[in-house]
Length: 168
Ligand SMILES: [Zn+2]
Ligand SMILES: [Zn+2]
Image (cartoon, rainbow, N blue to C red; front, side):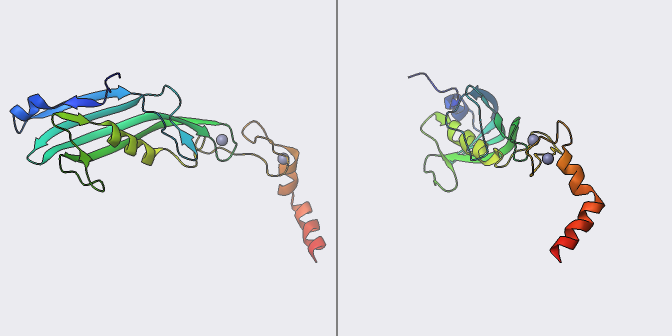
C-alpha cells in the first residue's frame, strides 16, 4: 500500500519538546461529496498546518483547502470553486472521538481531520457566480444568456391589470 501523503512522522519533534513544525501536505482523498457539490476526481486536498507537541499529544492548526464542483442551484449550470477552512485540532493517544483525533505512536495522520474539514466546507447549494440570474420558471431559458419573452410579459403592468381582473 502506498504511504499516505497525510501521515506525518513526529518522532523528531518528540525529542525536542516545545518546538513547532510547519507541514504542507497535498493528496487525493476519495469520497468527498455532499448533496450539492464534491471534490472532483483527482482534485487534491491541501493541508497547510503547524504542528506543536504538548504533553497529551499534538496541536495542529492551519488551513485545509480543496477544489469543488457542483451544479448551480439557480441555472443548473456548472459551478466551481475552492473550499478553504481554518483548523485547530488536538491529536492524542487517548483520543475522544467526539473531540480529538487519534495519534498512533510517532505517526500523526492528518487525513481524517482534512476529510472532516472539507466535508463541512463543501457548498450544499452552490452558485455558478454571485448574482446568477437562474432559469425562467415559465420557459426554462437561461437568464444569464439573455431575456426571454415571458419575462417581459410578467413585467408588463397592463398584463398585471388583466390578471387582477381575471382573479375577481
Ligand atoms: Zn448559475
Ligand atoms: Zn421565459
